[in-house]
Image (cartoon, rainbow, N blue to C red):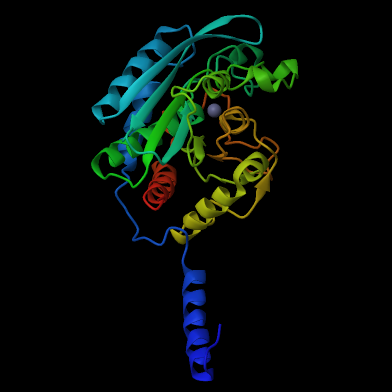
Length: 324
Ligand SMILES: [Zn+2]
């Protein structure tokens, strides 16, 4: 290729302009969309907690399944309930249901969002042995991720994104061994996600990526970048954390790494081949890495912080609208 010297100058000049303007653009160079409603997300959390602890084989759990199904349908989703008997670590059969909502099922390019809706049967972190036997309400651990995704479902039913969206509420994430048993058995956790990843609701199901939410409603959260998320999809981690920074939430989405988190994103990535990450309150500086009321009786509605819901909702919703 041949250019005269004067052309060279203008080509270089234009290239420089484009290069620097690109460099200053985030992946999501869009106008900030402020529509995510934290009061609405909070209400959806309350709705779940009002049933009581959502442990498989309980009435509260089954009532919550019906609530979530009806809510998703009211937002125009095609809803599939995957009913399955899953085996807990001790052989107990858990009558479980994964709840799958398809938005704009005609669209080929899709993204997968997920959270777990079951809550824990055991309060591992209570000091008192008797209190440990009580089930956890799971306002933050479980219901918060679902609440934020329900509000996102409401928003995308009004403002259509460019891509199709699937939202899965996984069951039986938090039914692994009690902490005192001191057993690290990966396969005892995330039972609903493991089942779905081996038996997706659509044959050869594929998505551009997966994004999971959990513990997204506590006060002063630290959403560190967990090692598993970075391993499975560091590209996505960087994009989302950059967007959070652009929106002014950088201090809560720090450039800090944490140990690998065992959560649904591991099985969705490994078994279904959809490269997935988690946004989850976890601070590598703490002895107990998660929020302070994790697996205690204090994981209740009083400890849900609406500003945190707004922040996470803003990040996820704004990200969705810039995926093409
Ligand atoms: Zn959880």
